[in-house]
Amino acid sequence: MNFRRMMAIAVVAAGGFWAVAAQAEETVIWWDFLGGGDGVRMKQMITDFNAAHAGKIKIDATTLEWGTPFYAKVQTSAAVGEAADVMTYHASRIPLAVSQDILEEITADDMSKMGLSASDFAQTTMDAVTVDGKQYAVPLDTHPIVLYYNRVLLKKAGVLGDDGRPVGMGNKEQFTATLQKLKDAGVEFPLGSVTADGNFMYRTIYSLVCQQGGELLTGNEFLAGDNPEKLAKALAVLQGWTKAGLQSTYTDYPATVALFTSGKAAMMINGVWEVPTMTDLAKQGKLFDWGAVEIPVIFDKPCTYADSHSFAIPKNKGKEISPEKRAAVLEVISWMDKHSLFWATAGHIPAYKPVTGTAEYKAMEPNATYSTLTANMIFDPKSPKAGVAGPIFDIMSNYFVPTLNGEMDPDQAVKSIKEELNSM
Image 1 (tube, rainbow, N blue to C red):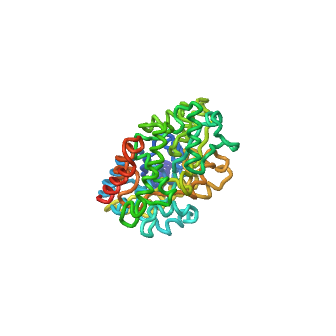
Image 2 (image 1 turned 90 degrees about the vertical axis):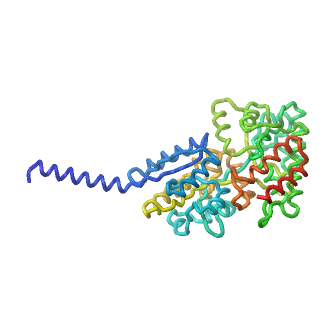
């Protein structure tokens, strides 16, 4: 065999090899809605995954607009078989997705292949991604609201404990007294709250309803039994703080963050996703000594509203996922959960308990301090009408804003809310 023929055979063989290699690498189409600080961190995790799986699996990621636009795109795309292979999904939106038949079930075999089990996650979190006994997503995190605070201002007002945390967190009277002392000490806004956005304040209000043992949905009825009274009490507390000048009025989300970071608000109720904002400002020397803790117990027991970023597999109509693709998707989900310590730097609490049990996580502050609230979480009621950017949020928001800002009676607001929710 002459040299040229040997080279020709070698080239053909090499071409065949690379063709096989190219086919062996699975490209996983990924959609998320993660912007800001957590989006930056997720992009880094995707880069790290691709490096660790070079030649085997590659994530091709796209970030879409958060909220209604994201979920509308998923619904329409799945209906024509053009959705992603894997996507981030709020646990609160899963009941609606199941009713639309746009999510694949995550089976026990899937969990086994990922090296995961239900016991690796908090029961409340797993329940949030389960409908009628079937699991439809794998939780990545829980992202509750927390109380951010300025240690400098609290110490000046005499309301910073020896443990470096706010005092007066045990009941309504104690916390109101803490807010009043801050006001008396000259703090412009003792508490910064997103009072111009009822969608956001739903999180705080629902937490206070839960603290009374209340619930939003009982069977198929909204605000059944004495739950209207519990909702009215929650609204009355928040309205009282506003009227007393203890809480910011008609403040939108960016303004609330600005009040806190500028030192005009001594405390702020906001999501854990603002931790990167505080961390980054502190590293630049542009922020005071700060911390974050579980929200105060205003009523009978600790309870905090939370949602969960989870991973779901779209059910693409007319396009059954291949075994090879599904295996790649499961590897993506498994790897992300098992490497979610870095995700915790976005402020979110990793859902995978082996991560939060590590020494590295326990040394991460303020994350480790507020992560104890996972024992006291409440998720949205399981309803296709619930979930972020859903109709329940919208209806309640219309009444929350005027009520919190002192322009509507809490009892009247609750009466209207109940009528509209039950007429949906």
